[in-house]
Length: 228
Image (spheres, rainbow, N blue to C red):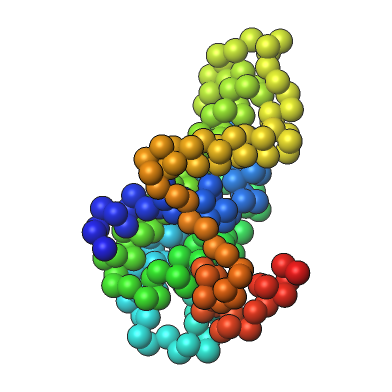
């Protein structure tokens, strides 16, 4: 696998937000302001890169039966570092992100990449995967926040652009978040279709064979049963 391809996969073809549909909760919650979205994106990217690197380096040492707790411990370490840095140097961002900052520990994107990629690949490739997934996450959450802040509050990065009487208040609420999310998913699907590529599709018809996280449940079909 080409090194650049690993990075670009996270931005388009395997975008964690619009294609893999992971980390939806923080995306919808934090994408109200561009500053908060950018801060969350940078924090998540740092954790992705750091945890991928460490988990890849330890992949042959970590026992299979306790790998998930080990991954979470590594991820939590990097999240703690990020929280301490943000609280010390950007307290306003720390307050704005609130509970969603510590919740990076259980973000599906980070844990998913640890299980699906870092645990199976060399350190350099895992770092590049973290960079690509982080960039893809940051790009989408910032675009969403730009749309919602501009239309909902008439500002961008806190700078007033549109008069308040022309704003659409619902864009700063949950319906506006879901609408923006859906439109961006459709836009990415159209871009990939135009390039002759298809977003990843996972079918349940073949059971665990098509499941992107089959190794996480050891073939217990818990996902299938839950879906039913």
